[in-house]
Length: 300
Image (cartoon, rainbow, N blue to C red):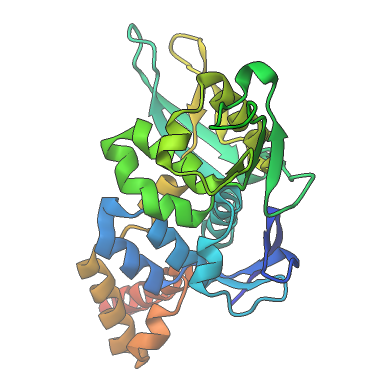
């Protein structure tokens, strides 16, 4: 099975303070298709953590890569690995279809682009925590002390996504507050502030913290520029790599069972061998068999 080696833009920092950036990735297999088909459209951060732990063969000197490591990875690094998983499994070229957002147009637009063309920015300073000094007017007034202007925070991880994904659907405002609570380690002299302390942050303070988080984070620009061929207007189309990749992977369980049965019947392979194959290999053997059977049926 071929693999792809890449360098994640953020990096996983282990408990000893070692930064792990080089990742070796193998293609998605029938096992991952089975997982996605079981969850359907409900696939979320927890499924991503599981798939990454299966398909990232090595992260720096960590091998195998357990699920607690993929949960602890930065959100941007997880997105980057999904891009690379898509590349090693299906190739570099992406075709997608969107609707023109202008109400007087609304025509379908075909987007074609290469994953290599997506801009990626590596984080310059790699650390488990960062500190931002707020301007006095944005300081947080704490009991019995001067306005607290130093905020220590960490960057969001897959574990945060897993914990809050359901709440984001129900109550986005509270989910954002709880995300800040999980990420902010200290406000002034207050360690591990609770939800009430986070709610007391001014909008200016939240803005400054969000900007500091963005500056400290690695970045992947997943906004595609396009032009509608019908109305000629330029538009920006977000590329949701998780949703796109899962839609490509989605195979009905019945179809997957038929493919396993077909290959097992003709090649006498076991289910485990077949399910461990990448989809392209599985389908390639299916095509070879179909061609041979067709030739036999026609007496060629």
